Image (cartoon, rainbow, N blue to C red; front, top):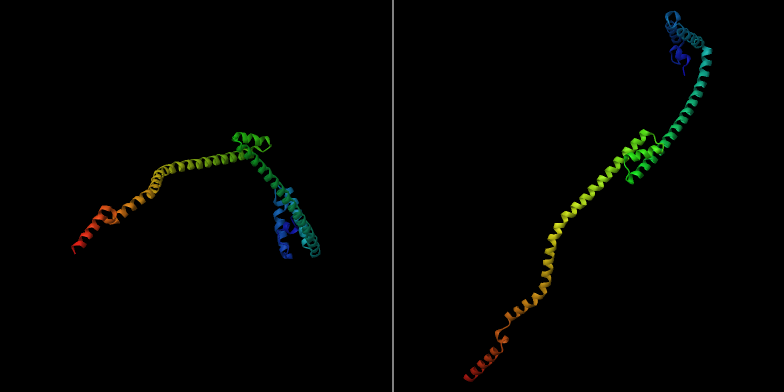
Length: 229
């Protein structure tokens, strides 16, 4: 919103002398005699400069103008603020609607991709739902790439599990015979223990107590010694 001060090229608190110098400079620049070939534009601009100087050079008219201008500026600022707020609300509503529509299109594409359809099918489905071609292509490409990445990740995980199972198999095959041998040794140990114990008892038992003939021989030897003495 141009003001009389803008027309003369001075600030709102310019002195009378500053306004006079600005007027002379602007009048010389835009005088029709100095603008050959653009007389009409120069004449209109020169008239605006004269009108601005006529008001601002008069203290009373300048005071009235400043008051009216201040009121107009407040009204203009309020109107601009309302206009900006309304514009911001419209833009926010448009963005929200666009984001909602985009989310719905992505969800639709994901559903068809989960069913095993390829990128071209996704693109056609989106176009059928009145999705803009460029956006439909973007969504179809993104969803197809995502599904491909998921399939590769699942395959890699399955291959890793299979490989881990193969590596564990030889270990279990080696452990089984060792476990079987340990179990056999545990079963055999209780049966061997009594036999070993019996052999040990036989070794510790005196010869005279073990054989009856030996016992009789000892008694007979004692009897003869008794007769001798």
